[in-house]
Image 1 (tube, rainbow, N blue to C red):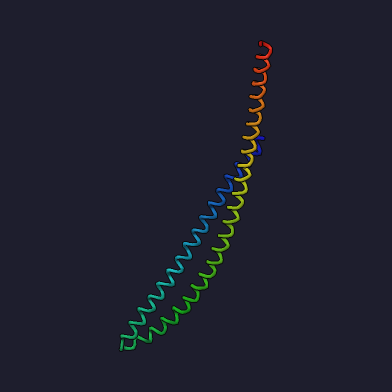
Image 2 (cartoon, rainbow, N blue to C red; image 1 turned 90 degrees about the vertical axis):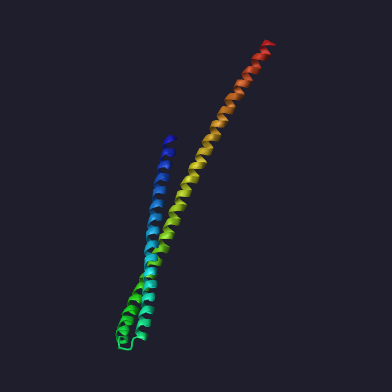
Length: 145
């Protein structure tokens, strides 16, 4: 019976490693999402600054602003698409992590149940032994008395 317990402990260890790997993957994806969000925010801030500069310039630099704005709009659209794709990846990674965690918990509960049964069996055997010792002592006292 030691082999199944050892095999289950190995499964638990592997499952913990799997959960940790999936957490790291999710964390990396979330960091990439944060980076994209920051880039969009910075681009929007830069666009506002360029608008202010173009509005305050009477020498015709506003023409350059139009090109900048069009380029930014295209880039922003691409970044929003990348952000949407990243969020889909994050959702899939969360589901993978949840599944790995459920698997780990199943193994841990199975291990705990096995250990409980083993303790109960050991306690039962010990109680039988103690009952037998008590019975033997009682029989000896009756023979002596």
